Length: 318
Image 1 (tube, one colour):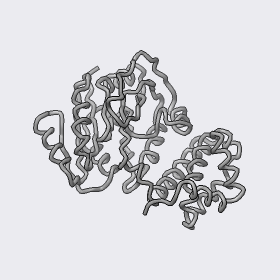
Image 2 (image 1 turned 90 degrees about the vertical axis):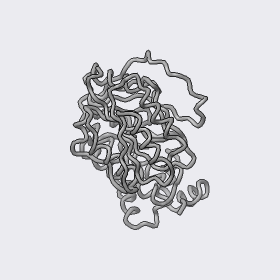
Image 3 (image 1 turned 180 degrees about the vertical axis):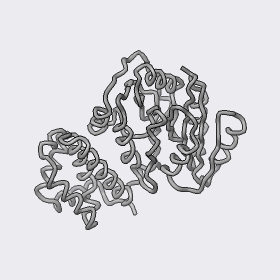
């Protein structure tokens, strides 16, 4: 199994507190045939020096330094340099169970899949974590079924990181530059190419809930990008798989979240209004009860919905 090289791409930006934990967890994998690409995206702390330190000490590690361009730019830089048959992404404040890459590679090969996925566990304190039990059957699905799964839950996830990909899936795909929520614009395009996706629901990826992470900084750009990437994804899936009500339900959740913040944006408001006109009302039944109530209020009175939403959640950061 270890004849195939896995390229592990790690975007790095100002994570000196967490980087060693991340890199050590990759280097201590039971699967050894790795190249680890640490892409320093213009860090202003000691992260770049830590990358160089690992590259000097470990032949499997390469440090790449570039001007700050954001998460997508760092991942794309890794993709350009990757030599592996398989690709994996790891965020630099997270870490891996030592068995993760071996498990992913085995599932990918034994199931003849294009992408293999494992579960993840969110954490705030590392001491809370216990090793996961691997004796859980692998589940196989088509690319279409994988897309549907990402629309209804985070179990499989449309994020980049808890997955092992065949390299050729990225032949014509790169992450969108300058965007937050960049995974939304990419993962479904990967799954569209897949004949089979293998998923083992075992939490082998540890996702750190950092209070200063991108997803905790809810500024206007966050909502703009969430709507833009979500609408692009919605239209593409609607064209490829007409009648997938889960697609409408997922986009409805995006609109419910973004409308109060973007209602003054003429272009984006027009997108949201167009969606609300064409959305199948039956899709709201796929949402939780509170979201169904929000949908009814949104359809009844946009302004009242926005006022109540902002009263509860507050304005976006500038």
